[in-house]
Length: 135
Image (cartoon, rainbow, N blue to C red; front, side, top):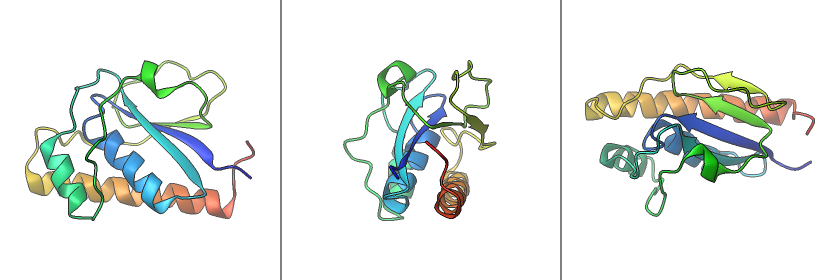
């Protein structure tokens, strides 16, 4: 069975969705095929995001902030962390994760958000390992 294609969405694709994509890519090999995008791409990855991910030995150098139109269209699941209602993904299932935007928060709060996202991604991976979606 092929990996589940997951799109992680936040507002700027500068923090939350970048972290989720990176965790899914590192921890979910063979289970998830992740991508990320923002509703209004910031055009950069937040420096604090780069730092807190480096603390987990995950390098985001070379990653770019991108919009939904650049992410592609064929996903098996869309995970929305934007805090906004997304337009229907058609037949693509959607999940909402309530994750605060750390872009203007302290470094310590940024770490807390990172750890929350890591736990959510790991739960998703375990869920799909236990019961792979039919795709």
